[in-house]
Length: 535
Image 1: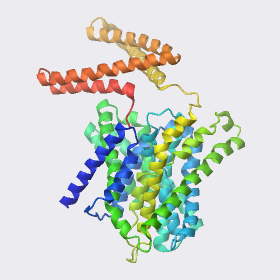
Image 2 (image 1 turned 135 degrees about the vertical axis):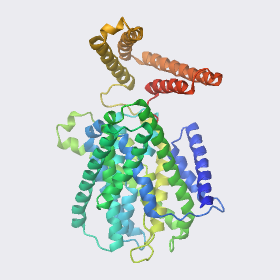
Image 3 (image 1 turned 135 degrees about the horizontal axis):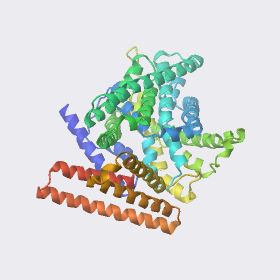
Image 4 (image 1 turned 180 degrees about the horizontal axis):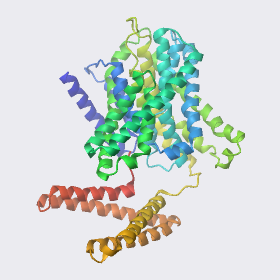
């Protein structure tokens, strides 16, 4: 046991080095992780881990789905609900059905239920992969929102398909009519459980005397409690987690009212999700030799061939679905035609961004080892091997080429939205004006009595004047935008120098560590206004 833990820690350390290398050469780290997982399997003498499939599903899926829901903008999600629904439900079911029937045609011994099982596993694209590949690139807001929303909801829909297919394999019986009715019942009640559980957590966070550490710990516990509560009643734990995450995220400004709480949670979740992503690929590396050994009548070349065919089908099906889904609703509805046309470039990027990732991998690993009668689960190792090939092909091929595709077609924003700098300046101006109004209305008589309040009032007036000038400057040409970027670069340089100065002050031991940390926190907040959230 101790040896296995030490092995996983060593492998994680290697993966972290690979991630740092990926950041240095500006390649999305999920691509390096899948390569690392493959490389680990070829290391001589690497021991094989035997993992409980149910444990894999329970440990990894709830927090991964909850984190994706947490960072989804509800307003943007609702605005683009139509294309998100067409991809998250329509494309998932379309892909699952086609893969189910085609896989039975060319994979010997594959049943229709196993085909649906494989389709449910490989149908959902990965949110983290798309986000990291597109990070720092000039991509329209509509595309990012649709990809994030799709990857959130399609995890839920694909996992429901997976669950039904798993039951069909285990029992040997499947009824499309009964499954359709059960789908809506299981998904709908999962949503109810998610909302009920989220309201309970809302009350706890909002009205009980929690601390930043307790709040962070509770947010880690929440997805597990939502998932287990729904599964206890045989409802969709996935829908419960997604719904609960969206609700808590939407009400987060009421629940988490201190900066220290929010920053603490950001650190906890960023680290947790990163480690989980890395760990899943490490685990597949450790299990891959056993999976290959268990292919039975299938050779490695057969597994690779089947994986390449399934990869090609999933990529092709996405494009076959994307363009009709983008244009047919516009032909049928005059209200939809009022929105700017997506053109051909937006659907092309969305189609090529369908990279599979950690959710598919964790789902494949969760397939039971044994049937209810104690016999081995049919084709389990082949399904996991095909899944790994699909992830490898889509991540490496599509992930590496997507930035070049975006640059080649010169993708531009198609919707009339405010630039990030303009939105930030506008928000800060509103906040400063509110603060000044509160001072003038309730505390004006204290300005002359209290020098600190007077300084604060003067600072607010200066900040408002500066904000108005900044907003005016943002209605500008490219040359003036470069001036703004230069200004932000200077601020970041100043903040970096200030951090070094704080380090010197800490060494001098004249100021307490607590006050030094407060100053560092303020620098972090100032820098966050410029750089935004790292995700």
